[in-house]
Amino acid sequence: MRRFARTFVAEPQHIDALGHVNNTVWVQWIQDMATAHWDAAARPEDRAAFFWVVVRHEIDYRGNVGLGESVRAETWIEGPAQGAKSLRRVEFADAGGRRLVSAATTWAMLDRATGRLARVRPEVLAPFLD
Image (cartoon, rainbow, N blue to C red; front, side, top):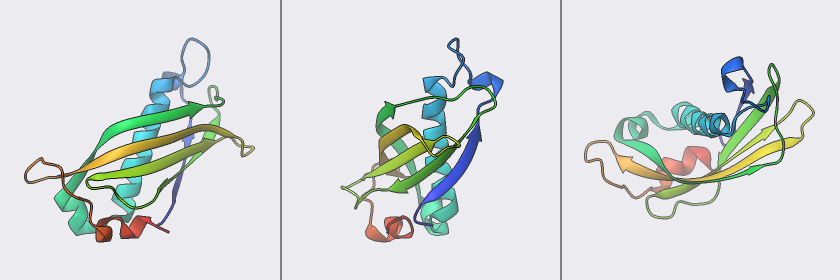
C-alpha cells in the first residue's frame, strides 16, 4: 500500500459560483485521501496510538472539473519523517490523465493518550514508503 488511489465525482454541493469544484472542496478531498490511506495501510497498533493534524498545505491549481465530472486522486508519503512531521503528496487528474491539482501537505503526528507531538518512528511509516 505504498500509494493509494481513489476517484471523486463533483456533486452539486462541490460546485461554486464559477461552475466548478470549489477550492475548499479540493482541500477536503486532500484530507480525505490522507485519512483513507492511513486507515487502509497503517498497522492497527499505530492507528490506535496516534493521529495526525495538518501543519501546512501547499496546493497548485492547474485546472478544474465541473458538475458530474470525475477526478482520480493518488497519494503517497514523500521521504522520511522529520521528527513529528511527515510530508504527503496528493495529485488529482482528470479522465484524460491531465494533472489538475497537486498538493504537498505537512502532517504532524500526535500521541492519542497525551495529545502531544510524537516522533514518527520508521516502523510507523514503513507501510507507506517505497
